[in-house]
Image 1 (tube, helix red, strand yellow):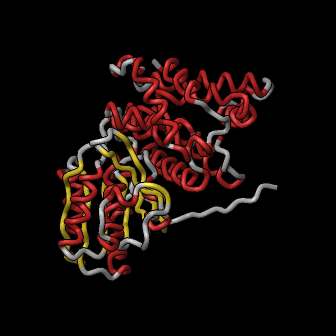
Image 2 (cartoon, helix red, strand yellow):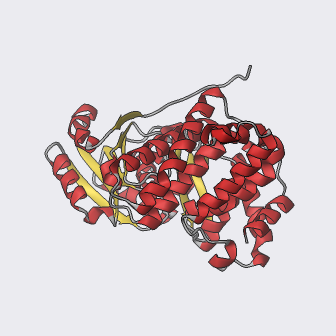
Length: 382
C-alpha cells in the first residue's frame, strides 16, 4: 500500500450569494485594515460595488486594482508594499488566478518584507503572511486552495512560483454568481486550465486513492459543464458545477501536483505571453500521448467513468479514444496551435531547456521525459 499524506485547506464556503458571508468572516478574523486585491475588469462591476459595501460596514480597507493579465514580480512587489505602507493586517483577493496569486504574494510580503523574487522556489518563505481570504471570479486556477503563487520575471522572460505552506489561504468563498460575467474566451481558458490540473493530478506520480477520487470528480464536472458555460454564461447551475470542479482540481493539484504539461507550458507564457490555460490545453493531448505507456490503465478508468459504453474495449483502446475525445473537446473552444501563435520552430530547443528547469512537475510526470521528448511534443503541437 502506498504511503501518502493528504492536506485540505482552507475553510471553504460554497454556494449562490455566499460572498455575503464576508461580513461574518471579517468579524471572525478580527483585523483592523484590509488590503483588497481585485482585477481591473471585476473592479468596475456592480458586484464589486456590493462587495465593497459589505466590507466597509465592518472594517477600514484599501484597494489595489492594477492587475492586468498574468502578474509580474514587479506588480507583486507593488501590491505588497502598498499593503504594508497602509498598515493592512489581512488580505482579500477577488478575481481570477492572477489576482489571487498577487494577493497571496502580498500577504507574505506584508509580514516578511523583501521582494517576490526572494521567495520564488520551494519553501523559501520564512514565516506566515497576514490572514488571506480568496474569492475567485473564474473557475480555473484553483489558487484559492493551493500553496502556490506564480509570477513572471519580465527581464528573464520566465515564470517562477512561490511554493510554501504559508501561501495556503485561510478562507475561500466560492460563489458561482461572481463568475456569470466572464466572457466566453476567459471562461474557456480558465476552465481548460482546471481540466489540466484535474487530469495531471490524476496521472501524477504522487497521486493516491484520495487524490484520484477528487481529481476524477473534477475531470467529469469540467468535461460536462465547460461547453455549457462557454455557450451560455448565464447558466448558474453549470457555473456552479465549474466552480466546484475547479476547486476539486485545485485540491488534487495541492496534494498530487501537476506534471510535464505545466513545465512545457511555462516557456510559452514567460517568453511569448501565451495565456496559461491556453498553453496547457494545447499541449495536454500530446503529453498524454507521450505518457501512454505509463498511464494507459488510468486513462481507461477515466474513459469508463465518462463513456460507460466503452467498458468492453481494452485499456489501450479506451485510453486512445479518450485522448482523441480530448482533442475533439478542445476544438469547441478554438484552441490555437503553436504556429497560430507565431512561435518559431527554432525556439523549441531553448524552450525545452527552460521547461526542464521547472523541475518539480517534470519529476512528477508518470514517464521520464528528456529535452528531445519535449521538443517533439512542441512539434506535434505546432
